[in-house]
Image 1 (cartoon, rainbow, N blue to C red):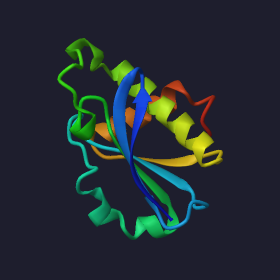
Image 2: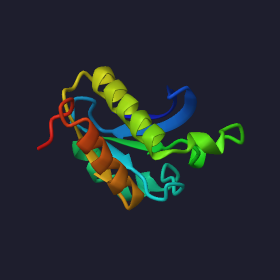
Image 3: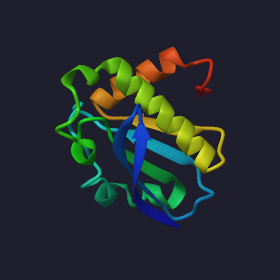
Image 4: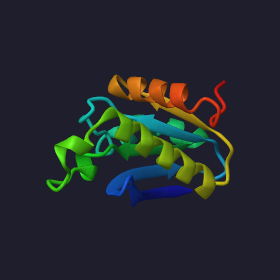
Length: 129
């Protein structure tokens, strides 16, 4: 099993991810929270326990939100383009780390917009099924 809260550097900024799952061989699922400032690391495990049986569930506090908040972040850095690039960096990191070729991308509210932009921009890199 895996259950860890980790700091990753995405786009030059420290950001946090929560990784939980009963089997590291299970498929990856990345949750993109809403808001954009409505982080979910603090409460997500309560509602995702059943998913953790069949997936490695990753919750990411996006740049400027939740555990990834820093007063040092420039407002000018909080752009849609940076969010998309950060998400792609995270996806590539997770695929490599868990030696997988795909993951399930799940978005809530703003996270759905972010996920759609990722797929539109990087369709040739990521397999969409």
